[in-house]
Structure formats: C-alpha cells, structure tokens
Image (cartoon, rainbow, N blue to C red; front, side, top):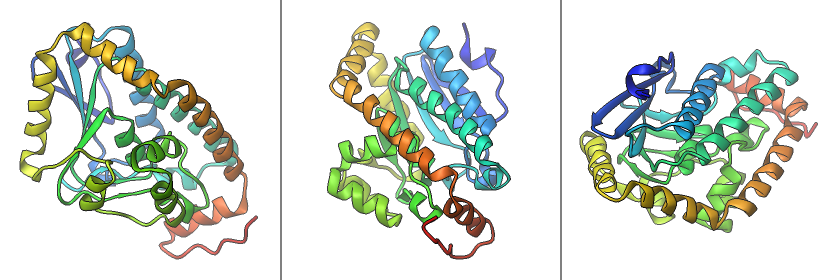
Length: 268
C-alpha cells in the first residue's frame, strides 16, 4: 500500500521527503488551514488507513500549508450555517478522527509553522511532540465563542502544561507565544521557520534508524500510562461540549465572530 501515491485528498497534501517519512500538510492555506467537514473526514480516513497498513512508513510530520498557519481551528464560516443537529453530526465525525489519530501506531511530529488555535492546537497536542517556528502562536479561544475545546484539548493540555495553567489558558481564551509554549512544554523546540521542516525530518530520520517494532511498542506503552483515564476524560469532554451546542450563546458566539464584533452572551 503506497499511501503517498495511492491516496487522493482535497484538503491534505502528502509527500515523502525521505524514505519512510510521511509529510502531511493541512492544505487550505487561503483559510489558514481551518478544519472543515471534508478535511476532518480525510484526516480520519488517513489515520484509519495508517492503522490498518502503514507500509514502509516509519514516522509522520504534520504541518500546515503556507507560512502563516499550522491550523486556525474549526472553519467557523462553515459552522455559521449549521443547525445544532448538523453541528453535532460534524463533531461526531471529529471525535472519531481524533480517536483514530490517538491510535495511529507511527510517531507523529508536529511542525507548527504559524498559528495553532482551537482545533489546531488540539491537533498539535495530539502529536507525540512538537517543534514550532518563532512566529507560532497558540490559543484555546472557544470560551469567547460560547463553546469549549472538543477535540481532546481539555485532556491533553492539563497533562502537558499543568492543571492551573490549562485553566488559565482555556478560561481566558487568550493566545500565548513561543516562549510560553516552550516553558509550559507545549512544544519541544523553537526552530527558525526556514529550518523547521528540515529539523523535523532530521528527528524523524533518527527515529527511523531504530527498531520499527520497538518504536511502535514504545509509543503504545507510553500512551498506555494515560489511555484509560484519558479516554474516560475525553468522553466527559464530549458530553460537556455537546451541552454548549444547542444554546443561544453558541449561536451568538459564531455570529459575532463572522460579523467581526464582540459577542453579547446571555448565559442561555
């Protein structure tokens, strides 16, 4: 199975910069690589394909197309037109995609070439580790929209940055930069933009030199330290997320975003 040449995607770009290394680009640069329904479905298809048969691949590098964004999060223009049932259906698709990503047997390295907001930050945190350019910015702005993170963000962030820091980040919705991301363990290294991908490829090549069975078993074993409690926590996150969807505040938050104004929340 040749995943690089055998899979055709509208919103993802696949290449193999070195043998055994899959470079996966989120490929909607005109909207800062925002996650629409089609991209979510394609990511899910890819993670499941890799789980079933990863061929000669040894590792994955996840980045964004263009030079401004890793991923800006959910496509809120698309969501602005959705009814509550449509929104919940899309999110159910996202839930399965994130669980499939968690189960991917190959190491996944994030190369954050720009902003990683909302679902974009959740994708980054769901990678095994991350490198980022100096210009990268990070945020969970969902509370400003009347919703909460719903793609494992409330599970990964406390484990990585600590519970108090995670509460501050999520409850304020304010962005933070590369210095804080390094201090809080959100990213492992800051690398100049022009060298970011080559550094990630270099690390992926070092991993590829190791025993492939050992690498997969290491990832599985390390994830097992949190997997049972993690998935129970994610089930709780999904339940809490769904409570926000059929509310006036959620409608107002997305409307305000698209109208480029401050939301007027009523707690309804």
